[in-house]
Each structure stands twice: as structure tokens, then as C-alpha cells.
Image (tube, rainbow, N blue to C red; front, side, top):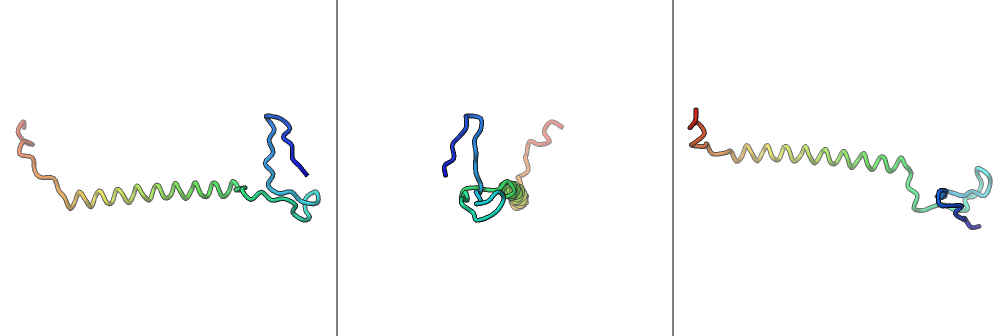
Length: 80
């Protein structure tokens, strides 16, 4: 059995080919197919990781500012 591309605007990406109409033994299964649900879940995890990274950086920056305070500027009240 061979698949032939019909034209430039019609491209098939078969996931599974069964022996019958809607069932039967599996004749072909695409090993590289990733379901849209898995793609969405992966994107959601990446976004959550990005947010967690921002929160962690913010807390680290706050701790750094508390441990290393700025020295008072001698010219801060010069023009008041």
C-alpha cells in the first residue's frame, strides 16, 4: 500500500491505518505523531516554569537588596 500526495494544497498526515473501516488490526502507526493535547500540556508546563522563574528571580533580587543596602548619598538633600 502506498500513499500519494494529491496536490500542493492537500497533504495527508496519517496517524493510524486499520485493517477494517474503523477497527481491526493496526496496519500502520505513525511513531512521530504527537497529539494536540500533549502539545498544549507541554506549552502550559513551559509557561508555568517561566512564571516560577520570574517569581524566584524577584525574591532573589529582594534578598540581595536587603543584604546589600545602598550607601546614603551625601548630595541627596543638596537642592532642598
